Image 1 (cartoon, one colour):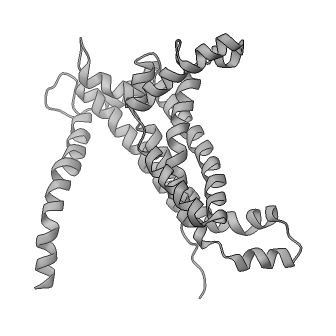
Image 2 (cartoon, rainbow, N blue to C red):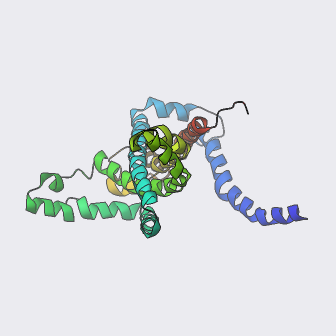
Image 3 (cartoon, rainbow, N blue to C red):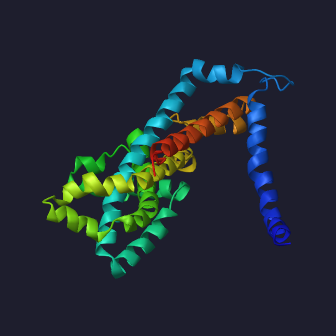
Length: 279
C-alpha cells in the first residue's frame, strides 16, 4: 500500500520530467541523425559538417577553453572564500552566505548589461578612467573574449563558493593540531591533508561549473551578440536564423554539447570514485 502511495505521489514528477526533459532530449537526438532536407532517413552528415567547418570547430574550442579557465579561476576564488568563511564562522559566515545566495542568482542578460553600464564604451568606470587618465580603466576590452571571460568568472565565483563551503565542515580541528604538533605548517596541512580530503567536492564543483559555463547563452549573446563564436550561440542560430533555419544541424550541435557535459561528469566521477581495496 505504501509503495502505491509513493508511486502515485511520484507520478506527476515523472510526467513532467518525461514531457520537458526526457522527450525533448530524445527528439533532439533523433533529429540530429536526420538529413537537413527534412526527409526521413539516417545520416552522420550533420556531425561530419561540425568538424569539417572551421566556424563550428572554433566554437567548440572557444567554449571549452572559456569554460575550463573560468571554472578553475572560480574554484580558486571559492576555495579562498570558503576557507575564510568557515574559519571565521559565526555571524560573519551567515552574512557571507546571504550575500552569496543573492549574487549567485545575478546572471544572464542583467549581468551583461551591468558590465556594459560599468565597463562599456560609455560606462561609469570607463568615463572615470578617462577623466583620471588611467588607461586600464578607460580602455577595458569588454567587448572581447577577455570581457566575456570576466563575466563568466563573475557568475562562477558565488556558485562555486556556495557549493564548496559545506565541504569544509569535513575538515577537523584535530587534524590541524596533529600536523602542527608534527612540525607542519598550515601550507603543509592543506597540501597533504586538507585538499586531498576536499578533492571529491572540488572535482564535483568543477564539473558543475564546467557544465554551467559551457551551456551559458544569455550573457554571451547580450554582451557580444554573434561577434564571438561559442557553441550555445551557434546552436541558437540554427533554430532562429532570420534567413535559413537548420534544426537538424542544430540538434547535432546540441547533442555534442550534451556529450561534452556528460563526459566532464563521468571523468569527475572516475577521479573521485573510491578505490577498491581490502577491508
